[in-house]
Length: 448
Image (cartoon, rainbow, N blue to C red):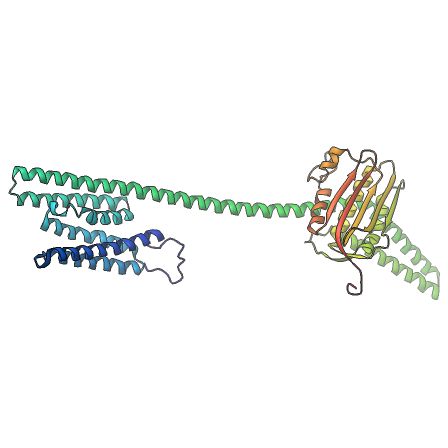
């Protein structure tokens, strides 16, 4: 079958022979043709006019056979070329052994039988066996010719027997060596292909595992946000109660008033509704499961906008201090993720101060163009062993069912992805300080 125009040269040949085997076959055919041409020329030079005409005739036939097989090989029919070579060698060798006998061809046996057996080995074990048996039969034919030419004399028969034994041994040994060599090469190739397929399968499994881990990581980030949403639910409900109370008050006032006071009451109700919508929208944005959307944020404005939620989170015994320090810097971060990080740290601080204390969230410039977000509490703190492991995923000191151990681990991943760093300082009984460093730039005319 011809090779398709867009056939990949690295792929196995469609004829059943490998790419390297095709190269071997082509080189072997060229060498056999060259061998017969050179040998016939050398005999003609040594013998002169007395050269047996059978010699150039056999050389021409061998060259024509090799040329035909090369044409088949070039057309992409490698199996047909190899089969043609083996089948055509049988009548040619039969003619040679029948004409010259075994003894005359003993010295030429290497150039006669090895190419045929080598090509037969390429075609398979069965073809090699038939070719070796046929060559043994031809050896017997040549021995018969030698014996009959010697009139079956006893001394000549002994020489013929010796030649026949050597010839048969050479054929069988060559066939045996080629069989085991080709079989070993094929097994090695098969093992290499199996290994390649196994590596490809492992690669695919690794890619699937990486994708699964990415999905699991995103789900864990969302789980952390939803955990914080649950803790904020009571504070959000408290804000809504106040807002709804204002709305009811303004509506009642509008019902009792006439003219301009009524309009003012309705305006107040409208403003309260807008505030209630803003709180609702913030809660939905915070809990939405979407890919990160980093953008330039005014760090101070973001922290100030989070202040009401922080105040609702802590009980009355905790003093909440939010200090932006007049910092005017922009950071490149996803606003929902930044809120999630700060609220998660606030939740940890709230749980570390059951008896009350002070929670501080402050901004201040750091070395270079970095911005430091400092989150501190005066709670129970951490031992050195706990502090050393607090950033590890799934590490938690909380009772079973009350913590996942993912808050700080997710915080570290998100901050590192933005080019920042996280440091935790804590001692038992002396509170905890978490320092978040992020790249920033000053708010200037260009940024505005």
